[in-house]
Image (cartoon, rainbow, N blue to C red; front, side, top):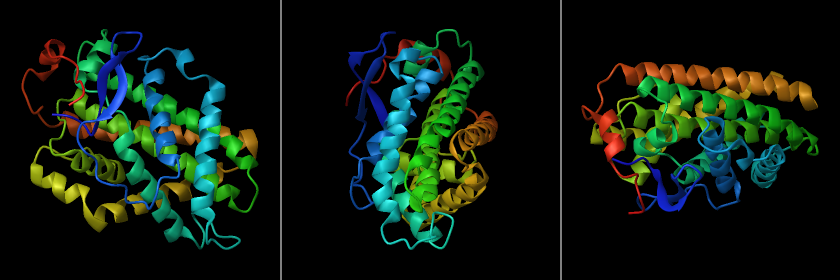
Length: 305
């Protein structure tokens, strides 16, 4: 079974693993009303988890490039999020519902583009992992570091003109961290031998539901994928989660490095807590196939369908 976006074996990385990304299935059309460039930036930011967990060389993403990506994401979001907002409105002000709905659109549109590694690829990239817990530790550590780097890098967004600066800064950080965490969740399901079935759109919705509910939901039943991954309820849960997290981030939106350091600390703690909860739930269920861990070494890494 495949996650919603898998690797293509056509372009090897330094360790021989595939690096091109391609969707395993046709993905449903974007629901957010147009591509403003933020979706691709979010996918690139999420992919940096692979550098932080040791799968890719550190120099693959220079520090300056990370800052450019955050600034580019903020710039692409600025027009969307500030259109129609009155002075004093923000993601957490009088424009809360409208702003959060825009963020839901961006996250839903970006999710199918986030690259997710299957277990064979993960094991090849982490040959020292003796079992699922070792590998999950590496993925969690990489996600925590990636989230912290988002918090540290988003300080540059505070230089944008006010009044939308606060809204754009919070939105940029929220979406970037969400993208990293969705990738982490999808790969943890691989590690614990519980990858969902279904088509690409169903897998996207299922992982977003897991992210919004902060629990390692049972995705093994086809019916649960349909219920979790579609409809207004998922969007309502995503909006609720984004709004709640945005409110918590308000104290960290301070000038320059003060806000950056606070944001890095908050992101690190939140992502670590999310991973702990997801892993506890996954650990409590048996894998879909017995012997999946050993079998992954004998299976070819997934190539383009």
